[in-house]
Length: 394
Ligand SMILES: Cc1cc2nc3c(=O)[nH]c(=O)nc-3n(C[C@H](O)[C@H](O)[C@H](O)COP(=O)(O)OP(=O)(O)OC[C@H]3O[C@@H](n4cnc5c(N)ncnc54)[C@H](O)[C@@H]3O)c2cc1C
Image (cartoon, rainbow, N blue to C red; front, top):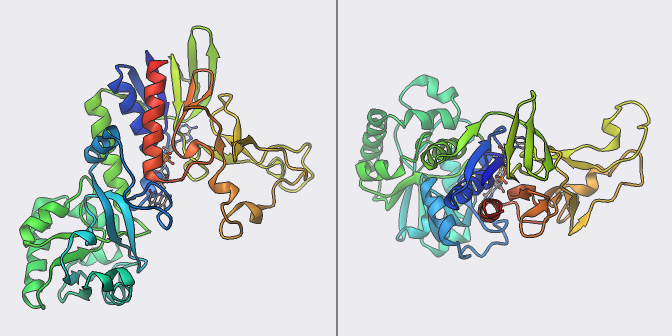
């Protein structure tokens, strides 16, 4: 059985490894960085404000989380550089899980980089019920933790890459230890998202400092996506999945099998295709209303507001139904389909319709590309595993 997976986010990786586990020959068309590469390291089953935080995870996904450098941590509590504390079901190993700490003071590493103000963050976290209930008190540590002046102008992910180097991590650990010696006793240390780009360095830093150390999440330039990409590439290579750089255009199905065509003309023959191409953000769903045909004239005909980036006979819909063609030649009213103007907006729901992953003959779908599924890591990973397994079994 030969399976081709399109998309290299968490759903595509999960599908490729699940199909390999079933004995299929698997190749993966990578596309470009999608939602997975932009996420910050929190893993949820449902949007986090509504998630329980202790949802069950099956054995395949538990193993995959560990392989990718994530910790299975029911009811984890993570700090974010937006000033909030929030629950999660699992997380990138580099992040500090506050739920594991005893009551006490948590030292916050200061730095002059954009998006990180240790004193303000400590004030904001201290005011939150989750910190008060656990008797956690955050306080900025004294000292200087950027080694070179150019680091003030770098992104968080670039400094994280510097801490891949053992000697540099040793310098950082010495600076943290010296700072702790000048402060009131701490139970843990929280850092900017700095702890490695190739893999998480939180455990190595904790060992050198002698206290639990870990990152807070940051919305811009987070290294968590870089760590995911590095772990993904190691896992696919170790499992014997062939990867191809490229952008898929169409799937053609004949009696003997399927052919995936890539931009530029290359073709891949296979028995089944898994489309793990993401939603609107990942590029799998394209916003293509009729007015996009001409920007300054009446469009020649009305058409669906969305289409898939790969033409494969997958029906695009939401709420279990195919999307209707809008009555207006100018398509959908943009405000009506997006948050914060709409609750449960179409933009977050639109995707391919499927039954048990199967969306068209020999075509299976996974992750954010599926209509009506929560746009979360765990939902994408679990649906990827199901699609990979189903495709390999034919
Ligand atoms: C900023 C941000 C923060 C988030 N925070 C959280 C969070 O805290 N917790 C949580 O659980 N989830 C979070 N999510 C959601 C979560 O990251 C996604 O639900 C999940 O990563 C989707 O994975 P995916 O593999 O389905 O899609 P993606 O990761 O988007 O991958 C899609 C892949 O398909 C490729 N592709 C698309 N079209 C083609 C084509 N035609 N040919 C080839 N390749 C193609 C893309 O290039 C990409 O590689 C966040 C997402 C974002 C963007």
